[in-house]
Image (tube, rainbow, N blue to C red; front, top):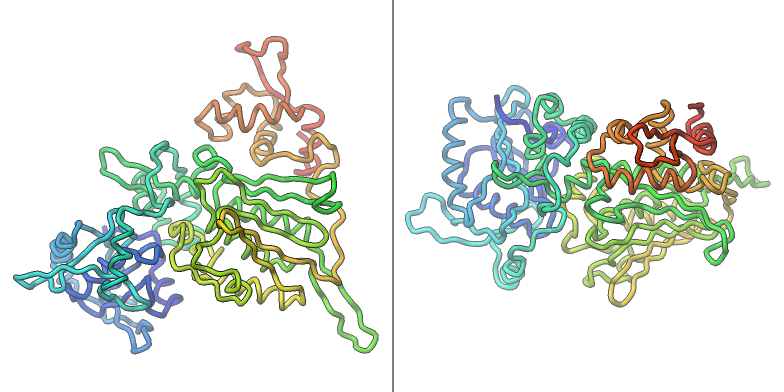
Length: 517
């Protein structure tokens, strides 16, 4: 049975209709042009994540695919694959894309998924069949494959062995650290044909299809991006992979603040933080006018602008820096702070004008997954969308700040001058001891609600294998906050030791879950 790519091909062809940097259509088997394009995708000069070559799909003069596609003759499929294998060996160093045969409207297509290579720069022969071959470096320029010459070639050579951090192997982790349920959930959400076969596949097989596992079969390795999206506790591998949402009821200079920390798989962390902000801090104000029936409705902070600011921070931050993303909210503004700052090639005046275009993305694979989940468009559109959202709400323009050394990046969203402001976050419990429950502790309390349990039983119920991490991130914080207690406090190492909710832990469940343990 043909392999299945972790993409929905019909969506690729029908929704992303314009041939661009990441997709090229070929009506037939043309080894010279196809090998040059595969070389360009392998070089991934702009760090966009490589691309796709669809063989058997014709397109019009505007680069839009024509349906039904011309297709490939069934008796030619094996021959094309054999010739492709031989041609790919001519790329230096050798580079082999993932291949799948798919049927679209009754026509057979070959789809090549060509991720950015781990050993760039790559070069390919100008002509595969020529006896005297001349090798050149190729890159993508918009919708075309071109030879890298002059300064462009020198810049490509300077990228030797410079693989973006999120596409590198995580040497501190194993393939077994990837969560198969999270991968299946992702495939189902993005509508991948691979979701049907995923439950029968091993974690390694599934990880290789998603390109979050690499290396030889005898020593496979998970990639950093895989742990960020498909592990329940990525902060265990990359400390401070979290979003801190801080509310200052008296302003940033006041003595009081409420803080909530969001952790977990990257997509869930973003969505949970955005949902919390939306529920607790966004207020719509209706302004009536004496001279007309229609009232004006404004938000203190438009959700679309917050979403763009936060997702961009998750996309572009450095996960090698042990600093969280911080969202600071008071009655005057909402601030998103992340590290490091933007590339030095981008001027702050470009941000204000909506022209901030990054030459090279720091986390190409993170952007790829966020784009599949419709959390970002990945084409430097975040700043223009923030400007439009603030203007549509009648809010002052956002402000973009960084320091001279580009060590940090800050987005300020001023509150609408006519808007009302939130009094207190409704998701927080009023008890001072329980108003800062982390997501880990919350998960533990839900499990503990089933009754007294041993430590190993609680850990197993949470699906955690690393006992020290369970104690440090779950058990000890819950006990320190007086939410969980031992049944035998005088015998902490007893084999009969069990853990149970305290009255305050029970109060938290009632307030947050609406149920009694």
